[in-house]
Length: 461
Ligand code: SF4
Image 1 (cartoon, rainbow, N blue to C red):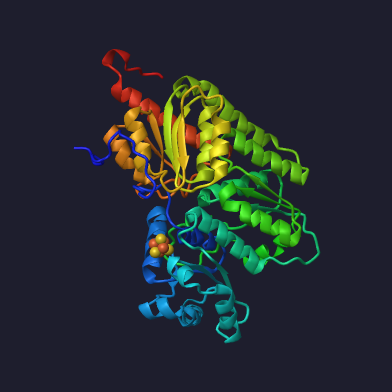
Image 2: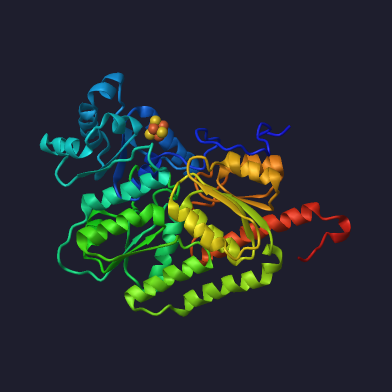
């Protein structure tokens, strides 16, 4: 019996009901961004259920411990305000857990009652609850606005607001704000910059925090992440590159408007074209040549595309995920000759529709896409029921559709709860493109091997 047996192919217009959303709420994105600062303890200002859920979402995705505190609102604080909860929490966290930084975000509850984080944080400092040399930073992350990607973007801006200063001494570095992507992706963006000899400051940077080694000793604050001292210098940098429009525009604009550091927002460097844009932007901003080693990797990507285009060509793909990830993936699957037949993202934005139209203009198929609240996996499933696809790309929640409809699933994005790899191996850059192609091709050819009649069961493909 089908797991999602109540999903029918008959599509009715919905305006108030979301089923199997392709998104989650702001604070989990804020918590993730905060973990990309060295010695940082994320703190959720609200009731404790949110914090437990968000820690567990990150832990299940990364299979790593995720620390975070909560203001543990009671009914009383929900009515009269959570100031005393937050000040007591700050005091307790510095006393018991000794972080360098506490990064506070909010939940629906504290946002609805209107707690003022700036005022409460100042009071905590005035009351002597923040030890000398330690920091508290904050960001408002109302869950009824946007999604986890918005929360990430808000916290990244909060981190910059908390630390960046202009000293007046230019440092010739380039700021890189990675989008909502994996620690391994951040490491890959760094590796490419290092290969070009470009000195970058990356914030946040979760590499080494959420994909660290097992040493036998638990480190609450791994020796990784961007340090407050490094972040402080970002106002003196030459330029900023943001990778992913939803996740990084706020931060890029902030550095531009407050510190006159010019910025450019590019797509997440997933696939050939988007990686070319990242490498080329590093080249233009730094004035350094692209080294042969990078050209070599790019050439390998082109080689795989030409060797295997016969298997990619015309394959129909359905995708669900975050908009920055999805737009880059759509461009990549088109580069491979595949058809991005159905696409949903729970994160809304006019740019999504515009960019999708632009990307799809030469695709010879009536591709369907939707963003926002009702753009959920239920709708994706209904589209698939009406016209089958060859491949699914998205997070673990798609496995129900994959099983019911017998479609291979490429796990990508957040969250992935039932596989590893995402935190250790990148899907950005040329090496990430090679990894993605290996996954796509493996899934397509495994299916061909499974379904081929004996007479067409080939040893060599
Ligand atoms: S939607 Fe609101 S109540 Fe639910 S987990 Fe998110 S912040 Fe908490």
